Length: 370
Ligand code: FNR
Image (cartoon, rainbow, N blue to C red; front, side, top):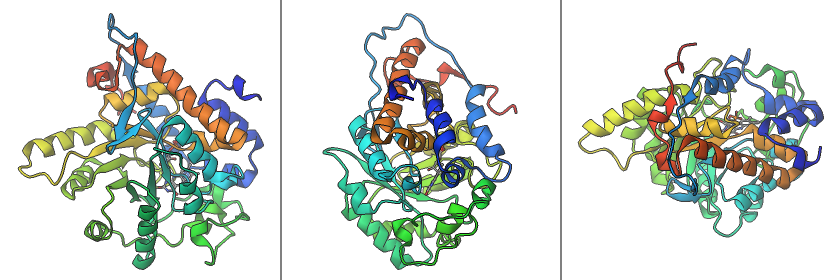
């Protein structure tokens, strides 16, 4: 299909389902167990309704924003997804080039197919890259990875905290992993008989805990973000520990099956943080930024999360599918589609800029009734 005939993000997925090699499709698309969490990530957006305001001058729409203080052309970013080369020979390089060309931030994964040098070398002038960290049992290795990410110009560290064990992704487990292991695993024993995730994820430290945050702080001055926060109590703990941000996420439905989707817990998290910052006499640092990922495929999804208090939204699979079909051009097109949708959704909503997208513009009364 010519790229000009692609009109939404689902089109890329439909094509990828047909043309991706089975092991790659199984790894990219799978969720845990019965995939209820995966399905819920998509369904949840259909339970929030938009309430537009009329007679607002929307002749100029501005959706540029900042994420952790770094400029972004839109209120969404490309989240970390491992093994980019399963879908396209350029892997994370074309992903990051597309993000750079479109002015959005890319979170580079620890378990990339391309090396850190390749990914950061592909950066264009003024482009921001963050780094997603899987914490190795061997803290010297972890320290080395953090230092490299920092030296190569990554601007924030997103520590994945929802993977002390790997989710039980059965589609993936039925597939033998035959591909190149990610650069981070070079020279290590790779268990290949139960899918990609098990082949690459064995080093992750299940002993990681809140007290390790002080150690991260001692190793790096990069802003720290916890990726995979799943309840209000942990959001408040994160604020107490002075992190710069949290990502509300169930890891694309790939970790704990039936964990709530990020959007569902967002209102509780924002309320708990409001209460924390209102009562705490000396909060540790400025208010943390709340990000959400999982199942975002439309600009309406994006504005719903923004209205409920998210600073920005992470998107994963659609970019992998676009990269598979068309490489960098495809990923750029995926980003452009979302920007075009955002332009018209914000006009229809009566919100000329991001700060005009407010809580009263959504009816979230059915969000949890399910
Ligand atoms: C992921 N995700 C992920 N997260 C992470 O912290 N480290 C990683 O290495 C990966 N790898 C990964 C691979 C693939 C194929 C997928 C689909 C996802 C999770 C990712 O960052 C994000 O939380 C979800 O992908 C968001 O959901 P959507 O947008 O894919 O629905």
